[in-house]
Each structure stands twice: as structure tokens, then as C-alpha cells.
Length: 168
Image (cartoon, rainbow, N blue to C red; front, side, top):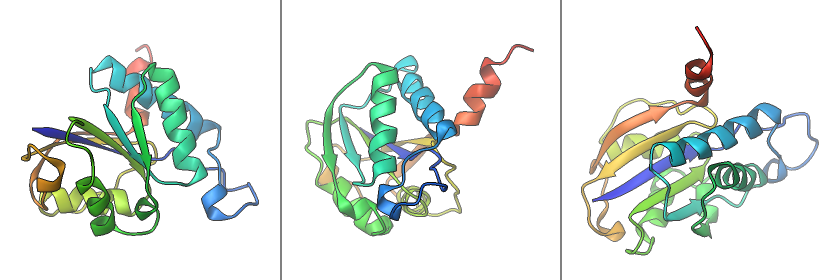
């Protein structure tokens, strides 16, 4: 079975006066992206493929996660993840190479939450910044993934990592 990890980009810097696609992460977003990359290593869920939006904040989120987690893999940038909606994002996922067993998709809202709902067969989800959702898919090949074919394993916002690491 294929595994899909949906990863919303870290919190961006709204004080930066640049076009939306060029907006970088803020300090909190950089910390959260790195923490989530470490998490994937710690729970043995490192992806062997990545699909990422072309925006500065998604690219930076991915770079920080990979660096902090100490992992690397094939990366594919796809504009359908930026403003294209859940069905467009799913069409990009369907094109993933079958050698990939665990795919990480780094994208935006509302597409990340909508794709999660589409793959799970419904529901109302809100994926916070830098949160990750792991979905087990009932498909052996990416082009066989269909709506309602997934099972949510976990949805984890980075603030829970901070809470867990604080001494009581």
C-alpha cells in the first residue's frame, strides 16, 4: 500500500512586501518546518518522493524539513499544488512514479485540507500551518489512487511537538 503525507507549508512572513508566490517563512514557520522534518525521521516515515508547490514558502519548508531530518529523495515541483484545488493536486499525485512508496506533498490551504477530505471520502478538516497528515491508501500504484481510498493514520500540528518536549 502507498502512503501519502500531506504537509502544509510553515507560517509565512506577511510583513514581507513581495508577490504571494515569493513570500518566505517567518521565524516560527522555519522552526516548525525543521521540527516536522525531524519528526518524519524519528517515526521512520521518511518519504522516498516529494511533490512540492513552486512557491518560496513551500520550497523553504521542504528544504528545512529535509535538512533537519537528515534525509533526501527525489523532488518534483508542480504548479497544480498552488491554487489548483484538491482535484488538481490529486491529478499531480496520480502521476507519481510507482517506485515511490511514501510520497510527501508540500502545499497550501485550502487545497491541503480539501485533498485530505477527498481522499478520506468526506469530512471537514482544517490543516494548520506546518501540520502533517499521514494517509494509508488502498492502492499499489499511484495512478490507482481514487477519492475515498484513504485511511487517516494521524494528523499532527507542530505545536503538539512543542508541548510534548516541554518538561512538566
